[in-house]
View (cartoon, rainbow, N blue to C red):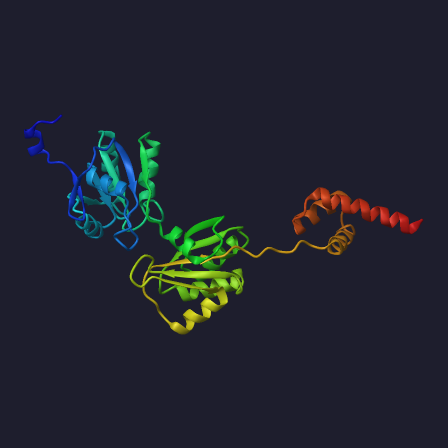
Length: 309
């Protein structure tokens, strides 16, 4: 139990809930990756507040942005800037603090750290050094967009930002075209129109999608439709403002090829290759199991022999 002199020299670390000051419990030495609100400052967890208030060191992308959150909840912890432009200089200092047994909290400007931000490298280095890394979960723009989009959520792929160059963007979309999952991208408001046109071209204009804008903020908007319809809307509407998450539904289920289609394919392949290779090639083209294709070959051979009897 600390005496009164210690309490005077080191006042308790607190955060504020409404008009009530809450004392933060001491933190174990570790790198704490703390999720912060993506818009609405009410979307913060109690665990996150206690971590931000109790940390020995608080690192953030932009001290001005983080200070707004800290002031809202009466947290006196001083934030230090850690971003892509000073990571090489500040990163080693944060690792040294961890090595000295201090608790270090890392936040991004909004959402969950390490998701499309420079904190990834710090977390990686901490793990490589054998230091403890503790996620403090909370707000996440990709997940908020996914659950609000109305699109399938049983399997999804977060792909960050698409390339800005037109060809690279189309190549990336083509690479993801058959991914059996809902696709989630970050996009800037001045590029969303061109991106929707490219997505409609590469993935199909009838594919369902949602443009999720200003999530959790006053002017939150979910615009849902096909890629073709959304591309036409934003071409007509012109520039928009705010942060955007683009969610695109998975590819449609394709009907399996009919028995007649498989027979025709095998007949064509058998003209140029032996039966075993023809079965393998037909399996690759149709996506059907090779054993089923080979069984079809046997049936076709039996039919041919029967016709010749």
